[in-house]
Image (cartoon, rainbow, N blue to C red; front, side):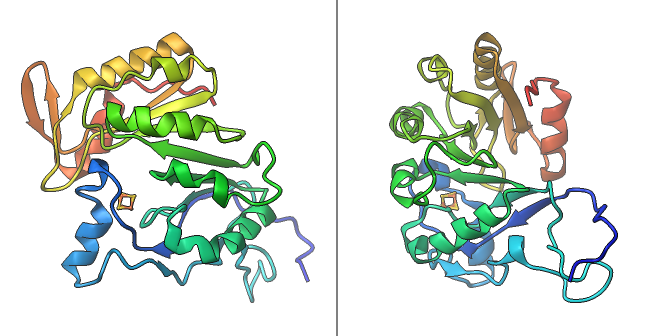
Length: 256
Ligand code: SF4
């Protein structure tokens, strides 16, 4: 069934949207880009539906040089659920099948980002134990209130990897008491995009960077957002420059 020649395809990064649609849970969801996009085309963004790419990680080529092989090459990085939340209650009926696929593709890495850490534990597969090493579940917190509400719940779930996303960053966030537990591998920070973006103060970014330096963990500044406050002046940054400007800040600490 498989070609005799070894599969030399390089790993890729892919987005796997298993289901589409979501409901807002906190102020970080206020300007959700999925809502903006769906409403612009008259679609109901709150309706959670399984997508056509549900089986993506286990889809195989039916013909050609790689007939029989997985379309997603071994070693690939799979970003999940960018138009929903993996732990949304409306997706409970599909999640077991999703875990089966994730388990089958233990030759890839999966990133699951959620704003619903209180649902993680009850939605894990029966053989999760202390976590699967090829799966990282990251939690999003947009301000101090959400950090203090979500992180204690999140950090109590047994996992092999812990990662925190502060996106969109809407306030200063003191993570010290959570970082001191020694579980969190990295913190990812970014401002808000879109026409109604709220401001992100560069001092908040620098402060979290400093906390990560003190703790010896990774830090990634993903994007500035559309409105950046720096040295008392507000900068409007166009969509195409938000990632580039954040990278230019030179704050990233890669510990992987
Ligand atoms: S959890 Fe994510 S996808 Fe769902 S409404 Fe909030 S921002 Fe949008």
